[in-house]
Image 1 (cartoon, one colour):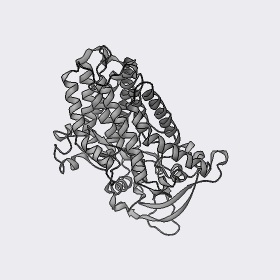
Image 2: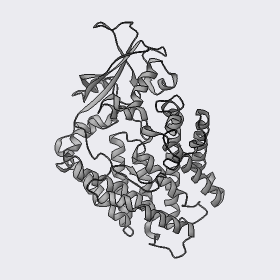
Image 3: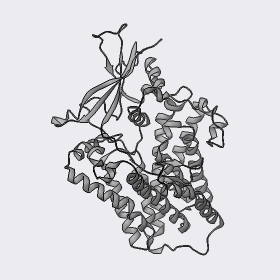
Image 4: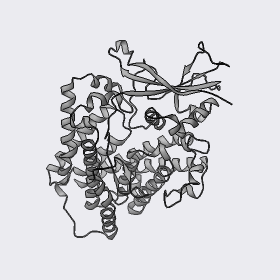
Length: 453
């Protein structure tokens, strides 16, 4: 059954790589391009190659980046379709290595917009896939075990950070708030939020059991590991249904495939190729810091301890917001501002804005700017250089940046002033005829009106 395990992992991982490169195709240039919100050329002046290895240290232009994005898309399709498998070991290894190296190059220069835990998770899993081997060969058992080790750190790290983090995880009340305050709710989040408190507490108890106890069974013999993998898959499906967490849950499901078909999985095959042995030694050495981090009382939630993102530490929602705040950006064509000035709001693709708009399903697609807007609402705008650059781009009606939005109220023409206001958002008590998904109250001015000059 290892051939099926390998097939599921390879096809699943290739599909996630494809999504990641499609996201880059649509968002990387306006976010990090030469004239983006956090330009790569400016960043490369401050960072050394060994600190953040990337092909863009040698040369960067938006066209050059676009070429590599399309190469990544084509390589993803080659592996997703199975054509790379038919080319034998060398073609298989080359395509998976190039996928990893190209995506690493984008992550290492993507700055805040690429600082999510699932970026490191994709790179770590993608690096292991290089050694998995094509379908014409027996999959490496050691690589399967190493993928289980990644899965263990994803799940157990998430459980530990909850116990050490927000008190609401210990008093079982975090999910009373989470569905409403999570970064990117979906339509089901509205209905899950309305479930009784006793149900939310039962959910937290189940989460603790699945994240803190179940991971140890990933290393158990058949059929225990298979059962643990299936339970984890079902758990990830519930998370997919309850919110938009990019490809985190989907990639975790791919890792769960390493637990299936374990009846033929031995602990350590005697005839092991040298590259696989070297991989095992490398992962063992690089695992020391993530293990120390997991047992530390000051556990980091998501962190990479090496610039290649080979072995990382993971976690999710160590703290849960009790209230949801949203930054609403507005513009006006008025030449002067007074009490009668009419302001028009910019709408983002997924983050809450219009209270009558239904929260969308977007995962596994990742809307990077929308996610950063969620973080921006928690602190002063001057802590977020990309946000001030965003305001500048809106004042000049930058076409690339406007493509990241769902609605430009000025239809491509520059407004005279732009401002930002901070609101508290809550799910509406009644959602009649698909309207009034949210209610909101003004909290404060987030950024005063800014003029083009």
